[in-house]
Length: 224
Image 1 (cartoon, rainbow, N blue to C red):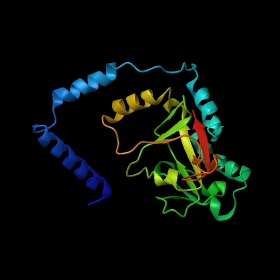
Image 2 (image 1 turned 90 degrees about the horizontal axis):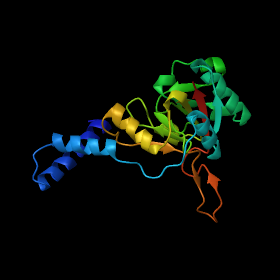
Image 3 (image 1 turned 60 degrees about the horizontal axis):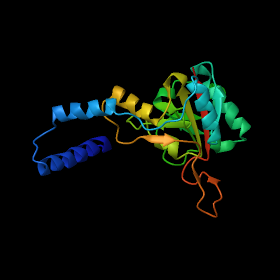
């Protein structure tokens, strides 16, 4: 049994025990509809005013969070843009080798002089290139969801994380992200990874250190 099936079985077991304790025999469709209706009607708390151009706001906030960002005209430009970024950061040798998600495997990585493989990272790779589910303009946050073809370790383990974001998938705030998830997925995934810039900590003498628990570089490639 793979991890996904084990997680599903564990979840079903926990919910069955809760239902037995509450004297119920199965999912209550009416209660589920009631909860969904409540969530759709529930007023949000105070939220900051957002500009009409959510993409520009996202780009600004992402850079405030120590990410770097480049806008591209088309998807085919991604490998050359990654090469430019690595050159600018003076990343050399094996640290230029990396892994990518399957959705990016068809790009001409070799033509850009890069060794990028379509596989999950085992922890030794220095470069991870992923897509994103969506991005949040209010906080400059990337939203990465797990899946059989979406290994989140690609975004969390390498020193450098390059994330591809579609401008059409930039939402205003976290509330809008959860609404999008409910509309598109129906139920939340087992994990939601929200990435706001490089990993950091200020535990030691309140000095910010990047890369403490994950990538110390996050570069965003923003597509139309």
